[in-house]
Image (tube, rainbow, N blue to C red):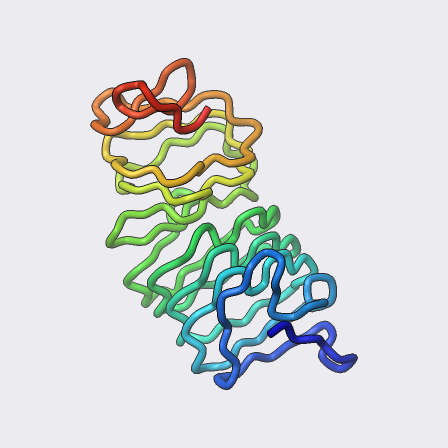
Length: 219
């Protein structure tokens, strides 16, 4: 069901435990006219997940308040939240869908609650500790031109560098899984280098290939 906002609800919405933040799509939103009207979101205690595409392209958002009960943030849930510069992740968030913060051009800081044991932000990336999965590269920090995937990362998730401004990226030997097109729309990217000791991937003329150099992955 797509919900329409009335005059009093324009600019601010409150979501309580009687609302299910289910999965949506990039053409089916929680609030039909929310993308260009909602400026503040407040989610009350009891909600445990933010579904896929929940607040996709809500470009006018200024504040987002999520409770400590959130455990999952879905695929592209906060895609294109262009006016948000800082996002806080609570103590119980354990997992994410595909790049929840893709194309959020001014989101320079993602903070993780000090008591969160599952996810972390370090070296300009958001990642899951146990699986060593890189979820999101923070694209707003455009001064970074040359990036080396940290050696504690073993998996690069789908579209995790989408629209980044990096020009070169180095993939170390510990990366064993690279999901679908992590560098999508990273138009400044010129060269991808892979450590020769990596057992799964290689590079050739600045492109990313499988180890046997028979399949192009990104170029």
